[in-house]
Image (cartoon, rainbow, N blue to C red):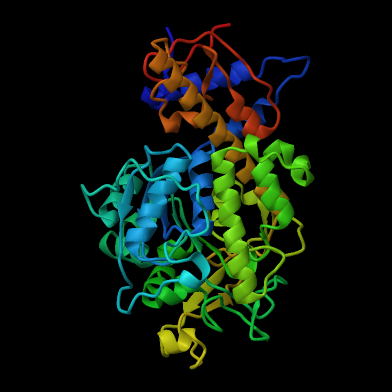
Length: 479
């Protein structure tokens, strides 16, 4: 009898996982699949995402919610790119757009620990996600049964020790409150991945932009990156935690400015495998979800060109903090594009919290180092924060393209299932739990298609086997 994978735990789950691997390892079209690579693609990481959803956050949500290697436990929102009400609504809308309404969203901090909140309408627009007509109205509201900090703690602490990751791509107010209230969680989690800060001083060769003809280090003030500047006390608290710092990865502007959404990237995401049609576009064949992310990048490119004179394409910061968790091989300790497995640079981070903070600093009328991130190299073998210096941008954009393709398949099957239901026939698929998608793909034509493995490994044509659907995806591995 078919077994429902999302109800399996422990030894039973591992038993069926091994059956899947054995099934996949059978020769197909004369080619035997590398079971080791398939096994690697099946390894999932549980993550919680903390974000202030603007344009680049939308890509972080897409990657977190649609990568088969990840299990998204939930999302907490924080003020930042826009006020909390807007960032929360944007988060729910992006999840709606990519067919992940099942992910719980918890509103968090409305402002910093000690200071007045600042927002970024000049970059992200008044809503925090301006520039697209394709963002749907959310049908699932944010959760109110508990606060964001308790939701984060409950979800992360429920995972086995050393397995779950916390990813923070906004201001660190929620994160600081979490570890202040629950210091024991620092030892429990696998790691913390943060998008924030800027090291400067030639840390990488990435151009950081100019304003009024002057080279800059930060993207919010002359010296500070927005997420760290917004709540420097929170950042200082988080990075000074010795237990947490040794399992923290920082993704600063020095790295994200190597991950540009060029025109080729934008049109590649818009047309997918039909990107060659760029010169003779057939927009009628483009899905709404691809239009959404294309429009998001188009708006983001315009504001970055106007604000920072970065015209090659906007740096798409936030998805990198997600990708580094399950594809660390795509990040390097140098900016020359060469991997070095022996490299294990570590840093102690100092966050400047002294100095003026506010509109006069942000406008450039007053110079202040408040919010600046200073990295001190730790001697070899020491403990500290990891900060990659380089990345494989082509492969990373490929991950995002795969997530868009996966989203299209999911939404297409939802629509076809709804049409069958409306006509009174048996739906192709009902109530597929998102957590199953890292193991088994969606149902096509009454058969199980393991195309998730193809998307994640590039190795696999469709494999089909008998199945039944009674409210979820079932897999029968008997040949």
